[in-house]
Amino acid sequence: MTEVPPEGLTISAAAEMSGLSVDTLRYYEKEGLTLHRPGRSPSGQRRYTEQNVAWLGTLVMLRKTGMPIRDIKRFVELYRVEGSEADRLAILQAHRQHVLDDLDEVQTHLAAINRKIDYYNTAVMQGK
Image (cartoon, rainbow, N blue to C red; front, side, top):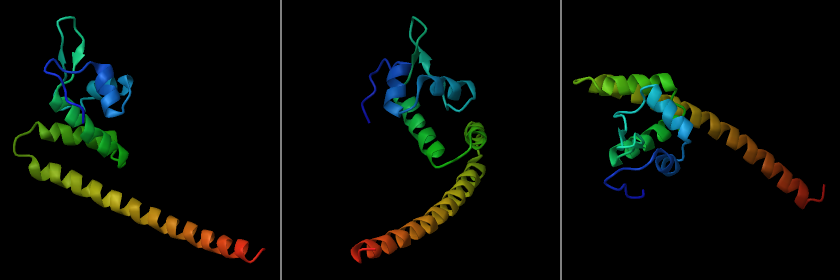
């Protein structure tokens, strides 16, 4: 991760660093998916701190593993509630199970693809 300067990153720099678009960052903020709203420069531009950027990394990971926005939103809402660790844990455990189920399905499909590749490798080697 690139170091975040003390004055923070602009929204475009934060978008580039996170791999998200500027529109997605604005959407996440509007939907309440950010733990802390980015600060503002004297001219009113968003400024993303190291903490903001680290959380964006978490959002990217959760989205790439298929967690729905509604579940991320619930997780963030609970994060703001003292003593909600058990509920947050339950969300993450349920998501982990979903990811494991998806992984199982992908591995089944991969095994089928590998069988087809083996078949065609044999056919090609035998000149068919």
